[in-house]
Amino acid sequence: MITKNTVSIDSLKKSIDFAFEEVNALKTDVKNCKSTVNLNNTKISELEQKLNESKRYQHRWNLHLYGIPEHSEENIKLKVSNICVAVITDSSVAIRDDIDIVHRLGKLLDNRPRPVIIRFAKRSTRDLVWRQAKQSDYLRNHKLRFTVGLTQADKMLRMKLWPLVEAARKEGKRAFFVGGRAFVDGKVVHPPP
Image 1 (tube, rainbow, N blue to C red):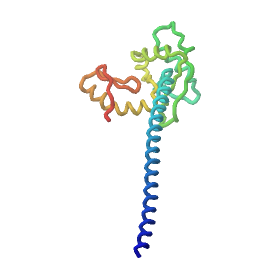
Image 2 (cartoon, rainbow, N blue to C red; image 1 turned 60 degrees about the vertical axis):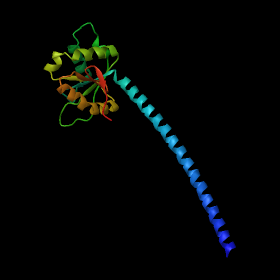
Image 3 (cartoon, rainbow, N blue to C red; image 1 turned 120 degrees about the vertical axis):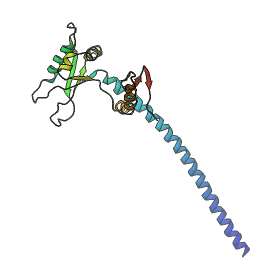
Image 4 (cartoon, rainbow, N blue to C red; image 1 turned 180 degrees about the vertical axis):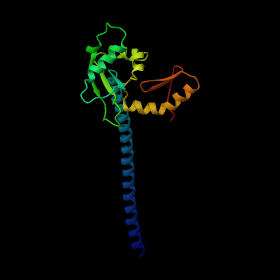
């Protein structure tokens, strides 16, 4: 009877030792998997940042224009060229040649005119139009406005930062956006965690 119990105990001990080794092997595998996941998450984050920066760089050649009435058979490039010429006060700039691509964005909804995206051949011309548009009586009188194109990540960041900018403006501080960054009294502000 004692030998039978001893054999059973030895068999049980071997089973427990085997299970213990399996658990240790699984712990090692899980640890390796966690390490790999952390490394991959870091790489993904870096790639997302590089992709966003690449998209942001491409957007630097574009402006969006809101408020142009929409017609079925329109020459939108001609309309935009005429608006840009009206905005630029310096007649020596050959603006028409520097407008590369123009088209409407999105689907027609509620009979509101869709915004127009303008791709400039030269960033210097795009920047000139953007600067001049800020003080343009022509745009105000025709209820038109230019905006810069933002990446999806920058739009999301702006949404998070908007309450801070709005609160600062109510306090009489100078608050504004540049791309996906917000500034209050000349200092960069960050979204709450």
